Length: 168
Image 1 (cartoon, rainbow, N blue to C red):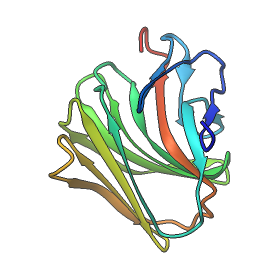
Image 2: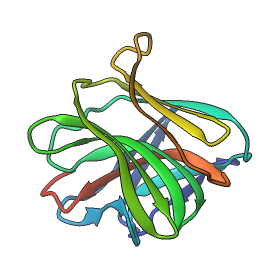
Image 3: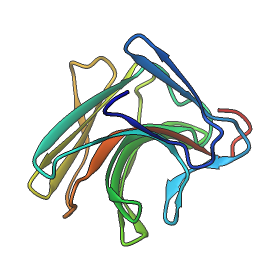
């Protein structure tokens, strides 16, 4: 708790810490999105140096309902960030990566995947090159995206969200 900061923009998340696991639960019917001008997703962030990095997160839950999402966010500030996540489109899971630059979002990857739970996500940054990988077992990794984007990294961490779905 000394290095992590909870960002709960709507003040309605339920957070439970059990040993080394963190559970983020969000109510349905309210958008907890992470898109242009609407950074409403609940996230747990820690300060990060603006240098090459690699971070890996294990999610014990799967995204199974339309517009549920969970992933990793790397922030410069609220108007400049990159996000790497898996969301459900109502039919299948999708690996998704996007850049928000000066408040304007643009997708960098959006492809169907089969992961389930557990779900492992890994983000690597070397210079301005970002690589997003996913795994169902933490051993065999697939690349979802690799792209260049300049960002002055200040914070990083996992996030959870939805987009106005009935339950989350």
